[in-house]
Image (cartoon, rainbow, N blue to C red; front, side, top):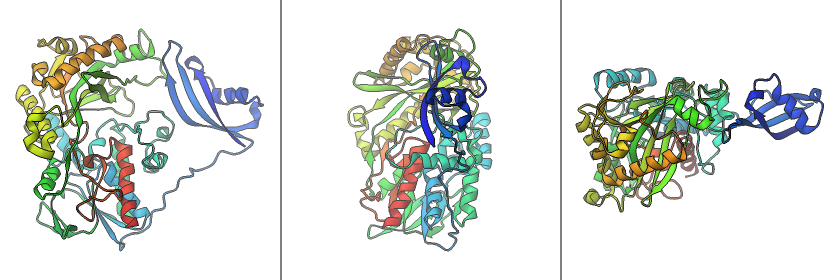
Length: 517
């Protein structure tokens, strides 16, 4: 038989040989020799008290062998001559939409404006070293989307939108470590995710799908409210009947295109703020109650913070323990920062977005004349002002955390992971009051929740502006645009996802909706 049990193991016992087998036998009151194997189903850390505990969910195989393979299998078939589904964008939503097409016997034709992961690295180097942004290939655009060069966080609350486990298993099938099936807050890491993305591409091509890089969509041909064709920047026109629009939250040209063609879009609330960076040891000491280095079995500590300030949420976003801050602009003349972590999370720094909710109906009235794009235009203006304050895409405005809260200009900054350089600018004056005043109050509150968080050793770097899309593309219960037959808004760009896993599930759902037509 197989028994599922919960175990709590003290950290000082966790390295003991066969500790899980020993504790499982004790828990079940059976002889240790009756246990053939144990399998960890879930692992988390309880660090609320000085005595740190590992929580395990365990499957105990009693006089029964451990299964040789997962119950999930991925049966891909040759779709070279099958009915076509066009997919615009090759981020998580687009990748998993393409894989699902092949499983269901349809041929995916993917159009990605950026480059493959290997060639994309050259454009990242150009951003970091030469301050030049390729507007089609950068930290946001290219094979794998914005998630490829990020922490690769896989945590999601969207448990009712699809089979979360199936997406995880498919990532493992394509080269991700099986540890993501176990950890309570799994991640792949920016150094390993590109290989997984490449493996997904190879699967799609192997079974007859098509992927066209450097193929930016610039227009749609629509007749009688039905998609007829897709037009590319090189003037090529591709006939298309069903189109999954999975372009991500930064593809502003797509929103402009839809507005220009009078295709319904909606303004959507979003969030903006800054990145705060601490020495990782400070976060470790707060979370693990340690005065020096954390225990060797513990990962770099993370945190999650939220505070209501003047009827708006101020909260941490995309927290990257043991990570780096990166320049994530998608156009020249703007400053955008984001975070990433390698798989080992072994940087000496921890960083997180700290952002403020922006209600597009109440907070930015002076942008109302932009209609549905008012949030996007507000976002653009803040990024441009950050560029003007720093003088470069790379020179992000920055202050010590304590100076930011007090409204003082920092004369010099502590060491930071943000390699391209920082511009000591009046960040507290750059941000509008709806953001800046709430951030200052929020940081003060966070310092009381996490003693040691509010410190002059932390730097605030701006701006964190691409938390989600400020535009939503509506769709009906069949996931199709209510106006345009054959157009399926999808993922973060459509306003239906908030990370790798939720976007992947949404991509699969859109394919399934097309198949049901």
